[in-house]
Image 1 (cartoon, helix red, strand yellow):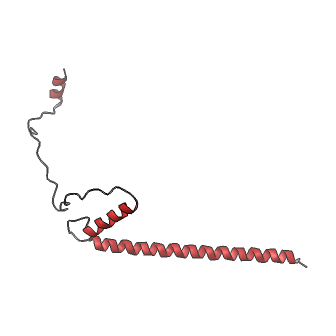
Image 2 (cartoon, helix red, strand yellow; image 1 turned 135 degrees about the vertical axis):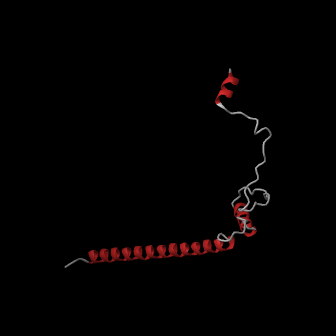
Image 3 (cartoon, one colour; image 1 turned 120 degrees about the horizontal axis):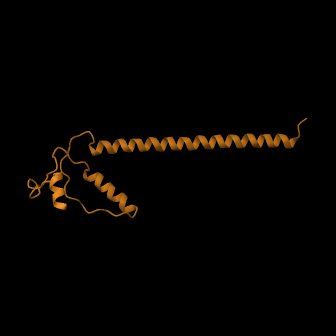
Length: 115
């Protein structure tokens, strides 16, 4: 006949195991809910940013303001408002340097110059 101490220990062990499983399920459920919430927030940000649209403005004002609030809340430096971002369809303008055509980078020219 088993002693009462053994039965008590077994019941305690069983309760501890059930508590651990309950805790693990709660933590997993919370993590899953948090992950789902963040996915939906990211999807909403993508919609608002117009990722699929060819608006030409990669950072709309609402997103820029959210980024500034994020940086200020964490004590990070907030850059000054830059010049308007050029449209993605426009190639960046290249200013020609003076004398581009006159420069000779041939090997013979460089070797003679260094002597």
